Length: 193
Image 1 (spheres, rainbow, N blue to C red):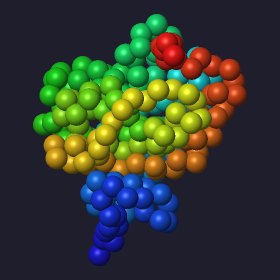
Image 2 (image 1 turned 90 degrees about the horizontal axis):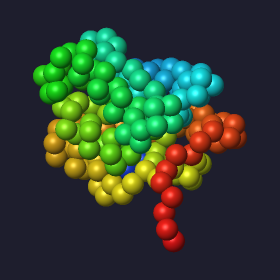
Image 3 (image 1 turned 180 degrees about the horizontal axis):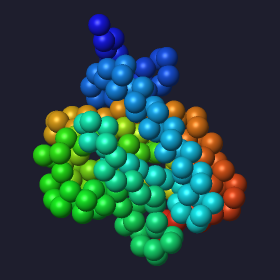
Image 4 (image 1 turned 60 degrees about the vertical axis):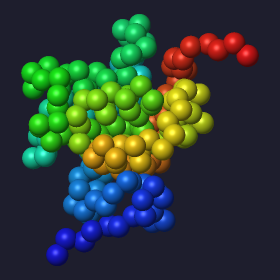
């Protein structure tokens, strides 16, 4: 019998700080952990090649990789080129459709989506979101501005988009710390005080 992990909606599970807006099977969580770990490993390599410290991948319900792209904001001189946006664009091109809902896809991200990427995920038709580091930790470690997303997980659930986060977050935090230590660009607009 499959063990179903039941998390109280929108609250951290005490064992490993994973949060979600639904219940996921242990098998699905194990798969997400493996994918997130691999994405974090690849992100560290991408950083060495000049990319930003985020990576995303989209898989179908048979665990086939559809698309995976890094953050290319600095490389492309384009503030819209976050990993999630790049990956969604690649998946839409690969599947020849702006509406990904008919493909039953999941997106795996090294960090919680920012406000822009959350909107893109919602409008893309992706069904499930799995992420590593929380926006709060991304902001504390790097200084990036992740934007204001009140009750975003609840809003996703209303739209039948399932979310699970803080997966392998310590490894992701270390990737972000190394990005900052290496002196790479913290890209964000300057704000007047």
